[in-house]
Length: 483
Image 1 (tube, rainbow, N blue to C red):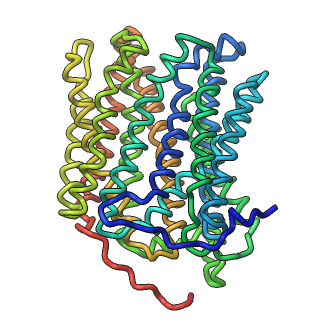
Image 2: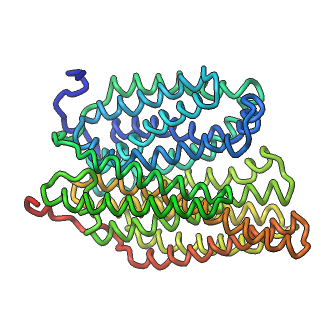
Image 3: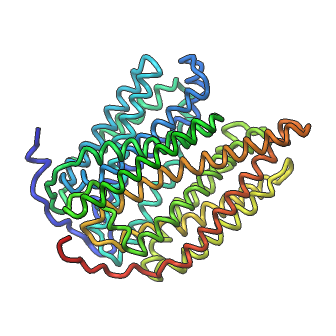
């Protein structure tokens, strides 16, 4: 059922130079709440295990299913965002998120809670590309770095705050309180957004190719699921699922190349013809692998080897996360003034130095050194991500913004899953090998973590190499004629 108000004709957004458009502020606020909710569950796992009588591996599905859903749904958002007005896309995204949150509050069983998280993830999958696509459409090129910096602020601070917020709430109430607090805030933001949001750009009607939908969901979802299975030790089964996922993705790609000849692809791969976009995509993917790997390893090291509790671990890594977010606006302004290379190259080198430093973790490494290395990593990522996102999307023509942001967001999920699976597998195999030589569990775990950090450091060399290939600014894209 169509609402005339939601589908009202698009109006050009009033943009004042030097100011962030209202539509972007609203979308950033909504994205902040969505991402905060994604990490707010971390500290609730032990309580959920006791309340629902489930194992830790089962409880982890609340995170795995979220990531899997994002990977399966995001490829479809490029087509969806071109077909519907901004307000309708926003209402679908936030409507799904609100529905999932409401179901989670009253979930009587783990299966219902898992379904609620999948519904939430479906809304999140639309929200992220919607924010990026709208930003590229309404913000002038000379202001994009500054505005993307503000976006980075929201996207970086939310994960850093999630565990801290959940830690406080779990002190005063059960795990359902996490969703009960988020629901009215998200509802208020949704109401305010629908009241003030204007439609941006003109939607284009097109039919949907269901073979593309099925192969995208099965391929990307299967790949993420297969990668997550490596953590459980089922290497043979995991490898088979990953292989099946890759074959299905290959079918999806061939289908898109065929549909592009008729001008109706679900996900337009012509974005990859733009060199700067492709280089940015590769760099972002490798950086995400290295970042997610370290974000998994560091808390494991601090809690399993150094015997810190969850709160102490959260406090130790929070300064780095906050520094990354708070630097976002400053990095954006520097990008607008000087271009990307002066930020991306030092940032990539900083990532490499931080991950190299983490290869030296020991039973006695001073906490100030750990805090410093983590802060260096987060600050370096802040210097990298804002310019890479802005340069990459700025290199594709406006008609491909939604497809470019969808590919970017999909690869973020796949890279996160791959980075996590890689470091956990390397760590486990190395720890088992050391344990068989007679080392204690703690020393064997430490040896596994050090080798996993070495993998992260090796990946960071590729980040530096791709950083050298990026231009200072994205070249203006000349629209080609009809395909």
